[in-house]
Each structure stands twice: as C-alpha cells, then as structure tokens.
Amino acid sequence: MRLIFADTFYWIAFVNPADAWYRRVRQAFKQLEPCKLITTDEVLVELLAFYSKSGVQLRQRVANLVRDILDSPDIEVKQQTHESFLAGLTLYENRLDKGYS
Image 1 (cartoon, helix red, strand yellow):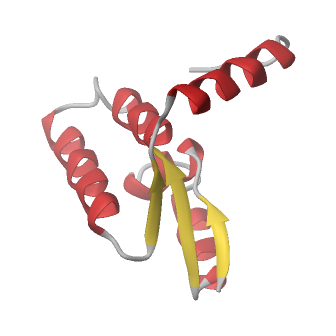
Image 2 (image 1 turned 90 degrees about the vertical axis):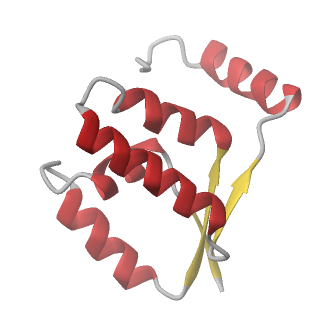
C-alpha cells in the first residue's frame, strides 16, 4: 500500500467545496486509492488555524474532519515532538525566501 503525505494545502482544499483546489484534491485522492495517508499534528493545527475565522459552520466542519482524521485507521497522524519542532525550525531557517502561514 502506498503512503501519501497529506499536507496543510491538501486538508484545506479537502474540507471546503468553495476552495479552488477542492475537486482536484478529491480526484487525486480517488486516483491514489488504495493508500494510507500520513499527516502530522502540526498540519492539523495549521488546518484549524486557517479556518479559525471562517464562521461557525465551517469551523465545526473542520473540527469534525480533524476528529475523523484522528479516528481513521487509514490515516496515520505523526505526533508533534520537540525533535519534530526542531526539524521544522531547521527547515524554516534553510528556506528564508519562503512564506508561511
């Protein structure tokens, strides 16, 4: 079974039918099946933060999605550790020309 990393971009588009990438993300997911998605605590925090000012309904949809992700046997969520934080900091330092949310 293929392992696919689901980043923040993926989840942002996946949850919102109004997102410009919604259809393409959903199609890509169907084409990749069967697969196991891998994401991280940090990605889920970014997803929640992204939609934090999007109104009650969308916020609830995102919260439900995150709960479903955490409960899904087909999605592995890597826990944030101090080591993963330091790795992210190093990545940030090595890419000072990039913008981040």
